[in-house]
Length: 530
Image 1 (cartoon, rainbow, N blue to C red):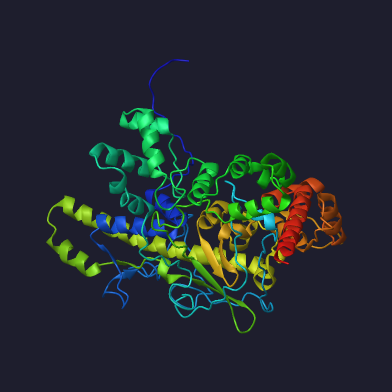
Image 2 (spheres, rainbow, N blue to C red):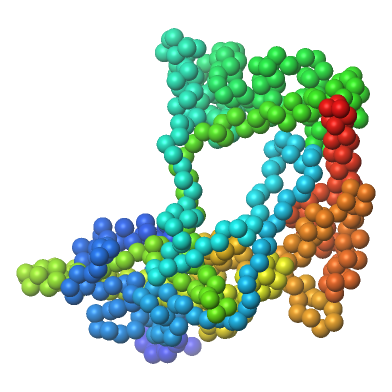
């Protein structure tokens, strides 16, 4: 075969993602805050884009949130094809559709463990349960807003920061410039809880001074208010507060040094190490629990971003569910056609005309992409509410197993699109604010032909069993398996143990020890009061 140059014609098929399609996919997975920042950047770059006023739109403008385009065509979807009109839409942004005929919603709060010893200070705090206790009822009005402005916002006043509070005390401790610089460096090394995040050696190396100088400055600043700041660990923080109260005697020092025994409920061993009576040990426990393990937490370190839902779900008078988009999270972008007409007529060079055409094309595509994003979020949220009707009506114990494929097939979209839509999007209900991904969970099969229960529903049942157990009858994992199987839930012991650990419930041995010690301490306090 001769190696000579020649021309050949070949036909092939390739999938090419245009810049517009990439932008539409990017918009789908952005949160409301990220979307607002992205739109602001686009408005700065494109002179034809502007934010809409609350009173209305300009003449000849295109409203991206309402889905109107210059030629009246339907916007294209993120998959590249034409988007179908949302038949359930009843206003500009949202839909108010009856999904089912379920009854009134009940409370589904997750009560914490009622154990006296569960409040022992340690570095691994139990995270708050998602959802709420069913008391956060609200209603939506025409624009999809909550019942009262700021219903879901956390209000923070102009509280003093920890850094400002400590820097005000620096002149009383240091009079020279070197001491003040060292003090500010130590303040910069604090975390939000008031603990020293960097070691003394690191601070000394950063400032180029001896370690002994840093240790002396640290010892002086550990006397600052609030008491306990600049501690390097929990034990030192508690020791500083006890010294301030003149309660750091040898017995208390031994107690603090062996603080891990308190977390493990090893009170008999603690009593032997400290050499005190049982009554004195209980008093020491009360003193420890009265201290502040996070002295810096009472100050505002940074502005806290409130969690704003993207979708509202409310129960209708006929028993169905109304699903509405939160208009406040959707940017109202307009294309200023009047301005384009004015400057297009004055354009003379081909470069200027090309630039204006690109700006107009980019602005029109952005409005269509924003409209399609809003429609897709609404469509996915509506199907989630329909699939999880039992959760909204009766609580977390009725949460069904659900995956992305089920939603994708129901709304005729790709799984990747559903995954992007549910990323960093939140849904507000009377039971609290949930991330859309919360409703996607694996299932556990049930006996007697019943439908499977979700993993979250099983965790809720385990939590209920632990909350209702008595100190004399602590449920082991095997016993929980028996109770669940009696209820028709086929589950293995290792699965129960995995779910129990995922919601931070200790083992039966630890719970039995905790409740016994809690009961003993309560009896001792009552006897002391008598």
